[in-house]
Length: 383
Image (cartoon, rainbow, N blue to C red; front, side, top):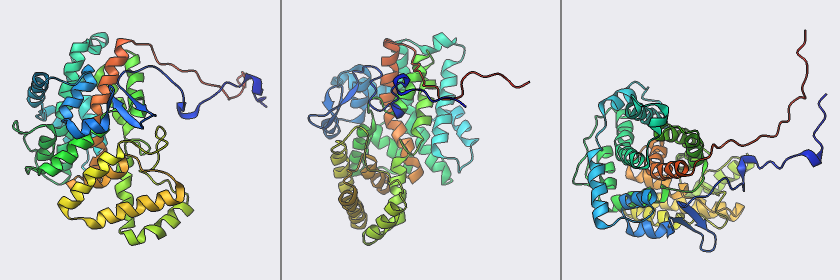
């Protein structure tokens, strides 16, 4: 029988890498003094209140907010790559219509990556900074078409061509719903995209950096990040929030539902965060956007349900909501299918992922942690 390792020999293991500082980054941080998430030093709530998503994408990639000319140039380039390529549409159409939308997005990005890397060696596919910024812009530009088509085909509808006269957020909504969106909806959607764009070394971003550290290409790293984001403990949480609200049904049923859920030790998504101990700093901005949508769509019932669950859960557990809690019902009111919520996260977070991919490439070291072995000692194979 294997003898247990003595306490003196046991290495410290941080499950989930909790508290482990793996590297440095200049892209984002949580300022604990102000409880603010900072993108390149700017509080995200200020960016969401004043900037279009295109400007924040530029900030994440380049380190500074764009001048008016730089923003205009980025918008021109983004508009050139909005169309859904035929080969990407064909690949999506090969998937069952009941496949999870994240599988569609992952497949689409893989097809795009294969096309861009065709004829290149593995080292060449890694690309220069300039090449990877261009790849990042193209991917960011086409993801709305991918996500929009995914939702439309599940409802038996055709692709909607992009419109050059609309900005990123408005065009995204146009391609999804084939109707020009109200400015209130565009503003709420733009804010959500900014709030989801970046969040330091979260699971999907770290996955992208690990893949990049092997000198793999940008698209492979993004495909890996999408796979990590699909998990309900990460990106799937906003879907779970809406499923919870749908399951409860109305505000008067919250208390009984919570009694049963907590009694069964169910994990209630949309609350708590490993980084924020005093409430997710992004929530007030997204909650304010949700309130404008509630008024716009005349849905006080949803607001009452949302508020009752939030207050009841905090009263019982002392846990604050995270960004997924207000974003789920906000996307629902906009008309997105619940299954589309996480692909929306991809369309936003691709800006942060690609910024981290390029940062990892700039000062790369292969990410290869150690493990503490707890299996049998060396032994002979039976004869």
